[in-house]
Structure formats: structure tokens, C-alpha cells
Image 1: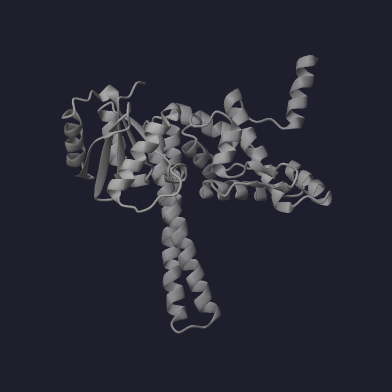
Image 2: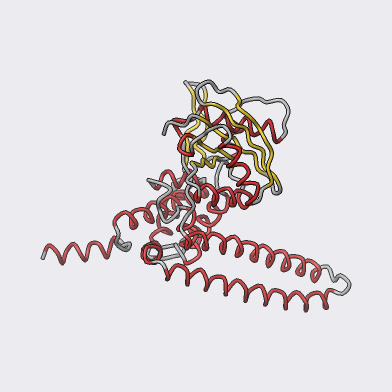
Length: 341
């Protein structure tokens, strides 16, 4: 697209600052602060029109701020405005060393970032209603799990040290934990209900579940974070996003560092995939034999577990691409023999 103007937007809970620049020369056309409400977004749109800008000539760029970005995302989709949601860290690192910081300056820097990286623009579109619902429910479930762990840990510590009123608090905590468990189960059921209501999600969910090591919650995470497997073209891209893809660290003949995974990753997904891999280290399992053999060869245990995480991810993407459930080597051999007979 030939964008003549770029609007850099710095968002907060209550307000957002907008800096409008011309693509041709990078010069600032104007800047203004608005309330982060429907009314404020409409005022921003009217402000753009005052510069005689057509919607197709404008690109909006902002940092991905989670819930704070949601009103802007909805507004842009309803008004056919091009929106680019970029990682805050990506913008910060691209700008080099900077002095000073405020919302107005940040909006200008976001606009400058978008102008400098127009060739790599990634337009955002809201996921479907089902995926959006799953994402919100997963976030709610995570809060419930954290609350459960918090209460459980505190109660356990008080009991171990015989603190005053530990008996009363323990009794109250058990009631709370029971309530939280009930809420988690209801949330799980609601997520399954949403998946069952969408044919594409239902099919993908069943395919992902066929991969050894992947359970219902992990399958739901994969559907949400891959946007129903439309966000990433390859398993390698998803592995990078999840922080499980190994990267070489070397330069010339003098620097020979260990191959490591990047710390720039989605920590939630990394944890989920790690639990999948560890759960597969049981006797009789194909992964267990591989794990023992590689460790016996002197490989680092965590490195081997990371290989297993990548194997699980690659198999998930394979079944989605193929459109058929996962088959073990034994099952595949049986089918091959039958077809050849």
C-alpha cells in the first residue's frame, strides 16, 4: 500500500498520544492527545480528516499493549483503517540509544519506526469471535491458577511453621481452593464449548490432540497463539516465538559460544511446551528412549528436553499441514504394509 501519512500512537489506560508524519519526508504534520474511549477514537478520526487524509492513505502504528489496545483494534477494523501492532521491545531496540521519555515523544518515535520499516509492515486484524473468546478465557484461567498457587503456598508455609491461626486459615484456604478449582473446571468446559462451536477450530483441536504429549489445555494455547495456525508459516517460526529454537553463537575463529535459545520469547508458551516434554519422559515412551540415549552420550539434559519440545511442535504443525491425525512409526508401517499387500 502507498501510505502518504503515518500516525504513531502511544497508548495508556486513560489516554493516547498521536503523532502524524508525512511518509514522503518524515516531517511532522501534527500531534494531539485523546481519551482512550470510543469518543476519543472518533475525535482522532475527525482530526485525521482535517488534514484531508483518505483512510487508504493512512497507516496507524502502535505498541502491542494488550487490553489497552483493544478499543483501537476494534475501531480500526470498523473504519477500514490500516493498523500495525508492533512489539514494544522491537521498537525500542530499533531506535538505538535515546534520551528522555514522555508520551508525546514516544508517539513520534513509533511513527518514525513505522516510516523506517514500511517494507516490513504487518497489518493487524482482529481474530474471529471464537478465537477472541478463547484468548480471554485462557487469560482468566491463568489468573485463577496463579491465585490457587498463591493461596496454597501461603497456607503450606504457615502450617509448616505452626503460625498463629494456621488452623483457621488452613480451613478457609481449603474452601477457597475448592472454589477456584470449580472455576477452573467451568472455564475449561467453556473453552471446549467454544471450540466445538467452530468447525475449523474443532478439526484443528482434534488434530493437535493426536500428537503425543499435547493435552487439551496445550492444544487450546496452540490454537490461540497461532491464530488457528495462520500466524506462523513454519514450526521454526513458532519455535522462535516460543523461545525453544536454538541459535548459534559464534564469530570468526575466536568466539565459539554454546548454541542457546533466545531469552526473547513468550514465557507462557515456553512453560507449557516444557511441561509437555517433561510429561513424555516415561518408560516405554519413544521420547524416553531418546532422552536416555542422548544423556548417556553426554548431552545436557535441558538441551535434550528442548529437542523434544521442538519435536512436539514440528509434529503439531505437520498434522495441521497434512490434515490428518498423527501416526506413530508402528502405525505408519502397518498402513504401509496393508497398502503394499
